[in-house]
Image 1 (cartoon, rainbow, N blue to C red):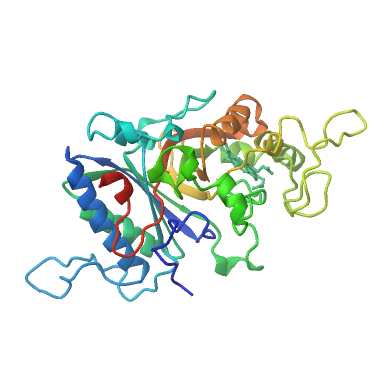
Image 2: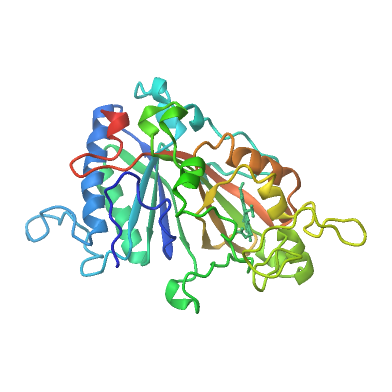
Length: 370
Ligand code: HEM
C-alpha cells in the first residue's frame, strides 16, 4: 500500500517505518497574529491530507485564467507513503504570540554541547516539518506547496533533503540501512510495535505537564557533517572500535549477530572493554535506561566551496518524550568522549514539539492555536 493515513491519534512519520527520502523544512513565522498561524495550519492540514492521499491540492486546477492551486509536479504519482509531521520550536513561545504560558517544560532550549560547530543558517525555526516519502519528487512537492500556502504568514528558514538506500535496492526486505560511514544505523532502536515502550520513550503523556502535547512527541534534529575523507583513510578495525560494532553485519564487537545484546561488561586479556570505553554505542547506550527513537537520513549537499570536500553526513532526527532526560544527557556523554567525534561535526540543531495527531474535521495544532 502506497498510502499512510494522515489522520489518527498520533501524527504519522514518527513510529512509521522510515521511507526512502526526507525533505525537512524549518519555517519562521512572519505574521504577528496568532489567528494567521491557526489559519495557516488549517490550510496546511487540508493540503497535507490531500497530498498524502495522492490528490491535487485545492480546487482551482483547471482554470486557464488563474495560477493552479497545486504546483502539479506530483500529478499522477502515487502517494509514495508520504508523511508530513508538524512541530513548533521554542521560539514560537517568545513574546510575539502570547503563548509563553503554554510552553512545555520539555521544550527547553537545548544546551550547548562541547565541540559543536553550529551555524545559524542550519539552526532553529518557529515551525519544523518533516516530510518523508518513497519518492523525492513527492516529498519536494509537499514542502514547496506548504511554503506556498504559508506565504504572508511564514517563510522557509532552512531545508535539508536526505536519503537512504531505497527499499528497492536492498536485497533483504526490512534490513537495517547503512549510513555514509558504511555502518548499519538503527539497530539499537526501540521496537515501534511495542505500545507500552512507545508510551515510555516516544509519546508525551497527559501527566507530563503540557496537556496540548498529550500523544505528541519532541523531535531533535541535528545536521551532522561527516569528515568522510578522514574516515576513508581509517583502518577497518579502528572504524569498528569507533562504533563498537562490526561493519559487515552490524553485530556488537564480541557478539555474532546484528541484534545480539551489547556485552558491555566483557573485557579482553589486557583488561580493556571489548566494546571500547569511548565507542559510540557504549556511550550512547549509557546504562540503557534512557532511549530515543532515531529516524535519521543521510545527506549530501554538494561540495564545501572552501575545502573542496563533500558536504555530506547525517540528518540526525530523533523522537522522544522529553529531550531533557533523553537526547540531552546522551549527547552530553557523546560530546565528551565519543571516538566518533574525530570524524563528525554538528553544524545544525533544532528542536520541535510535534503535535498529537488530528481527527478529520480538526486541524494540526488546534490544541495550541485555538
Ligand atoms: C547507535 C551512527 C550520532 C544515539 C549507533 C550505531 C551507529 C550510529 C552506526 C550502531 C547501530 C545502531 O544501533 O543504530 C551514528 C552516526 C552519528 C550518530 C554516524 C553521527 C553522524 C548520534 C547522536 C546520538 C546517537 C547525535 C544521540 C545523542 C545513538 C543511540 C544508539 C546509536 C541511542 C543506540 C545505542 C544502543 O545500542 O543502545 N549510531 N550515530 N547517535 N546512536 Fe548514533
